Length: 173
Image (cartoon, rainbow, N blue to C red):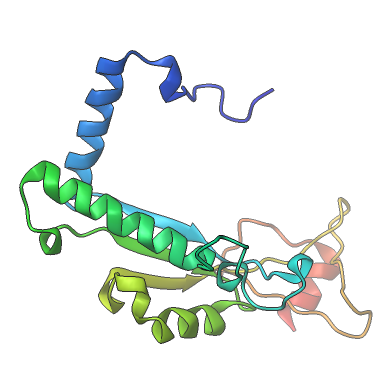
């Protein structure tokens, strides 16, 4: 079963409906009512690097990183929305929200800064680190990466994941 059964492909719609949806999308962007979200918490270990995956050269002929590729797509959407609304492109705000992790946050921020935020401007990019929750077994016991060491970090005082028994005692220490 598909995870999102109500998703419709543009290829399945009549051209008039595609045009209507495109117009609505460009109007929404031109009014600054949306933002783009980039999930960038993973490291590229399977790609043979410890750098964030978005920094990696994935072999495009241009040599662009994934981060640059996505930022340039946003710049183009801003241009299209501005042209559609008859605005100067500088009047169109389309913020990029970049979710990092503890492992990727500092390097991702530095990568963007060193590259002048790929034309989006510092004010056009907002970084935030995803929180971490402990991993538990089905029985509620804390899974440890190393028997002598564990780390528990919670988003809030009230976690959506209820710790039980030994796990609660270890998390409280």
